[in-house]
Image 1: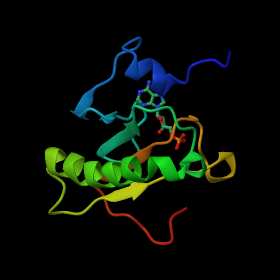
Image 2 (image 1 turned 60 degrees about the vertical axis):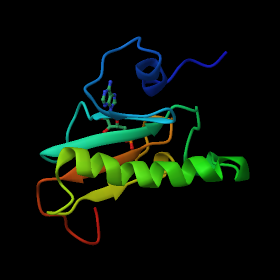
Image 3 (image 1 turned 90 degrees about the horizontal axis):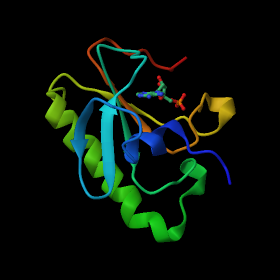
Length: 115
Ligand code: AMP
């Protein structure tokens, strides 16, 4: 059996997290190593390793996550100032935790193109 990811352990309540949003399908909590004054990670409760691992059956969940990202931004009070949503897909793009997640960042200027 493969080992649980740190995010699955948070879902299962085995390790603590500073939760800012939760519904029946997803959970958002503050990143432990924030890269901006506001940095939250939004994850589906369903175990999906990466963006590449969404199937057709996950279409509603994918849309739910996008809508939830906006709700998280609203809950954090960053909608007016603007925020960035980032998904690292695969090790080559910097994905370290193999449980798909959206980074929601705000509170500082963001450059384009991203580094
Ligand atoms: P990624 O590099 O896209 O896989 O992002 C994984 C993110 O998860 C990183 O920004 C980490 O700082 C964050 N992270 C890892 N462990 C925890 C944890 N226990 N609680 C909150 N965030 C975490």
